[in-house]
Amino acid sequence: MPATANKALGRFITFEGGEGAGKSTQVKRLVAALQAGGLETVATREPGGSPNAEALRKALLAGLVAPLGPAAEALVFSAARIDHLDNLIRPALDRGAFVVCDRFADSTRAYQGASGKLSDTFIDGLEKVTVGETRPDLTFMLDLPAEEGLARAGKRRGAGKVDRFEAEDLSFHQALRQSFLDIAKAHPERCVVIDATRPVDAVAADIWRVVESRLFGAKKPAPRRPKKPTAKETT
Ligand code: TYD
Image (cartoon, rainbow, N blue to C red; front, side):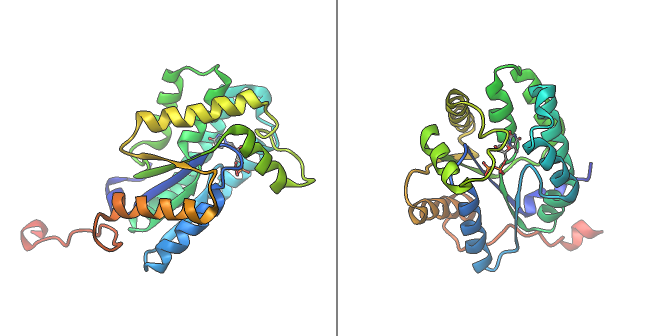
């Protein structure tokens, strides 16, 4: 695993939530806002984000791993995450870029955890070995009732095929929503719940306010840069 000591240079922001919460729209809006501020910003997604992980994404969303059960599914999502971290996320953070990712490890906890068949010990251990020190600095939980999210996802899909997770029943999606809210409650220093039932502009404005206050403080947007070594440090 590559060194992660420089991770503090960049900022890692993730978006989480159930189906149809509007994550990809908000990722685009935030990336555009950060880039407009002159910050190098990488937009990415999970499962996927690197060529090997995109190959695993195809298998996961086609439901090819589902028959192996939730533990195996969690392992394959994590395998994709390891490749994504090694080949895209850590290199970007290490050069001081912002990384904005549509889903990350909280999705494994919520989705695979929603089966009710995985212990917290299993999920905690898997997350630890997969993610290591590369935890998000900030996570937006886009929250809306499961029925509303599924209706939006259905509209977006049109006549297309329902994927592996959209096909789960309403109680699964309700458990999923609760799970994301529980994660946010357990990690208030990292997570912010956003009411995603509102119009896109209102949601984007809330997100930007949080980014400004949590990552930039009162100052103008500027990532933490590596401290120039003093003469003493270089000798
Ligand atoms: P995607 O089409 O990207 O859906 P969405 O727009 O809702 O993000 O498909 C990703 C699906 O994979 C989504 O249903 C959530 C699921 N998923 C997991 O079950 N576990 C995970 O760890 C991740 C990252 C995603």
